[in-house]
Picture (cartoon, rainbow, N blue to C red):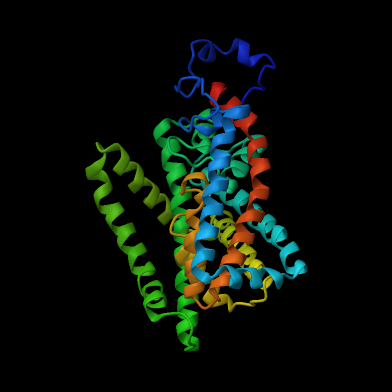
Length: 355
């Protein structure tokens, strides 16, 4: 499937836009700059300011609240120990993570007779998905791109749900492996009530989910949302059942989280704490209850708060966990400009019919 190149005057010629709706069926928004409603990819100029400022405010509030608990003096002392070489390596870890995300997106959406995105579209949706900034509800930008490439609304929802499910699956496998390694080392520092569930639950949970989806999917065809979820579970099962064939999907997602966890490790090292890798992964996977893709506004405030606490519970000093996670989140903002730069392509994809 290919797509014709857009006409430079498409905004004036597009009949859907002229009717006041996008090609995806949504009204063309007329938002005041302070409004927080609507899909963020439809925003332009000052209308993007409220979510950006809200995300910034939530992260600052989370750091201040945590610093109050840990003690402002302790947090200040941690800041004075900063080692710039470690901190300067964090963007390289993010770059490694972004490369993994690119391959995961590409192969998951193309797997098992799926959809090949153009390079331009793929780069745009990866930039938007990696930042997580446009996760606010409704159909996601990558869903719109898949529809543009010929997928039905339902097929697009299955692929988007599969990508989200693969994130959680790889996180669970990392958490399981790290917990088993930590328990095997028999070291103190990470509570048993954190490591034991990770070591025991994921594999049986996967097996149960795959079996239930296979058994009940034919009976639930009339329930749209549930059948989409079950189809996504079955597609994930297919990906793991053929790991060599789908190594790009599995390996890409594994690289994405490995790079992201490395970024946190480097941020902690920048403030003087070289954390055990297994302990870090246990805390990291526990804290990623909602990934940037799932949580609104890339988990603004929420991820900062939860990750600091779970990494502290896994053995890092609280003040160092706060400064390290705050630095990791701050440097993660470097992905936002590329996400904003992807907006024209995403809007174009939403407005133009597939060829």
